[in-house]
Length: 415
Image (cartoon, rainbow, N blue to C red):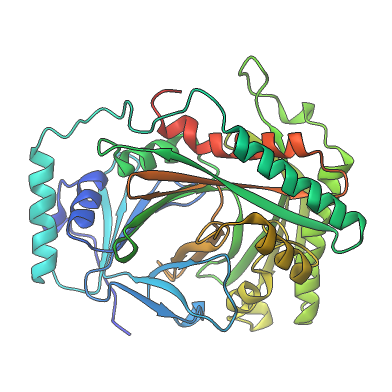
């Protein structure tokens, strides 16, 4: 394991901004990740120079600082992607560098090359308009809508036949984007608009793709003091009226379908605790929370791992929780089999998990929701909806449209 040095001096990175360093890193083909944690102002940029992207078992407490990313279809014996934290820069809300952690010296040739290119980019007039960066179709995709609603009908029928209690069905929405699109600008915009979400941008050069997202759902979090946290998040309502005004929380009324959906997710977490005979946890909720343009029901769970002498709890719970019933279903195995057969596409990293591990001693992994993949000129938006016996196909389609719009309305200039 490489040692990590913290350098509070601005050194050769002085004066460089997030977007310039991200662009330089991408042009040089370095795997990198940008993120902003919920309710935080700092933005962090991780760049892998030496190690690139490797695979490892997510034994979180044993990892060196880095960024973890996993597919939805992840078996607990499989390895996950790991971006080594060769350089980790922390920026203030005003984009000033606050802190630098590095495994490589500033004399490293790739570091010098990165800084040189970032300085060149900074000197250029790179204020490129984002207009027409993502093309929005005038008409809805009726075939896609009919296909998704048919899968909902099949799911409701299977639930009524007692095959499972709930399944989460998802779909994609493909839109073209042009070279003028600037992902780091889109990230910064999302970070400002959605302060309650985990906002991230990940460059995977070996796959020729980037992933941008604003996820409201924490999977496992464990800070340097040993406090473990997870949450159940389910149920969805539009947070704005037809006039575009924010609906107050106290005016939100939840139906039986949403309440039961959220309760299923909470019970699943409690069952995971029971499997490892963990009884000392705090449960708070459910409560109504705002996530972008949507309201959800959320229950929070917290454990003191120091008091329990259980430092590996996050790693253990990661394997038990994923995929959660919020992205898969209840019971897990029959609902997973159903959605795998019926969705008709590979979810890839959508509804998998991602986030920084052991950065500053903290690990924060989130479910990869409200996300879009950029690859070969195509922006693929992903969204899902929890299907229960009470589900109405048209409403479930509308829910997925709202979730796609969480990103689309921010990063597409046309809206």
